[in-house]
Amino acid sequence: MIKTNLALLQLMEKLSADNNTKGAITLRNLSVRQQLIQQDQSLQHVYVIRSGVIKCFMTEENEKDYILDFLGEGELLGEIEAIRRMPASCTVEAITPLTVYVISNTQFRHFLETVPAFNAAIMELLVNRVMRISEKASRQQLYTLAEILPQLLHTLQSQHITFTKQDLSEYLGISVRSLNRMLKDIGQTAI
Image (cartoon, rainbow, N blue to C red):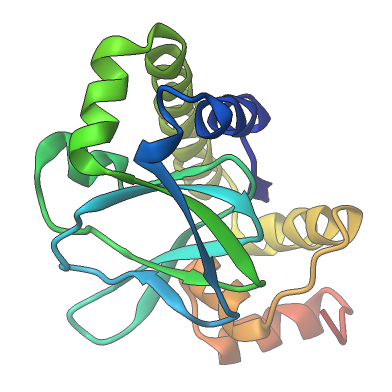
């Protein structure tokens, strides 16, 4: 459920310690519920999660939020906006205390062009993200929410993760009321 990328995290640790590149990378700390990125905002930086967990969500025209993903250590934020030079497509909010590496968009593009290991790590991350999105979409097409919910709850439990009902309903794209009804149907009283 919470995606991580330890290979990119290790590479960022090396780059931030290297005398040639460490000046281009800074650290930023955020508190729980603090937003790192706001939807439709112009971004000047790319972020790599050093520690903590974020939720990435879109707010639709009807003011409802839809959680795209939960991301943890080593995951990249703002790369699409940096590559395409466009405003943020979603909001990123800390759900635990968070520390991120901060790289300017210009420096990010420079690393892509001049550091082969960085380029390879980013390409791998993007490919994995496309695959995860495809898997999630196909699961949602092939299975009912009643079949997906127990699997999701099992994953949360096995990873020792606790989320609010609001977060789970936004991740599934349903109301909290519908989630409560489904939890009752499967005999689950608490999350």
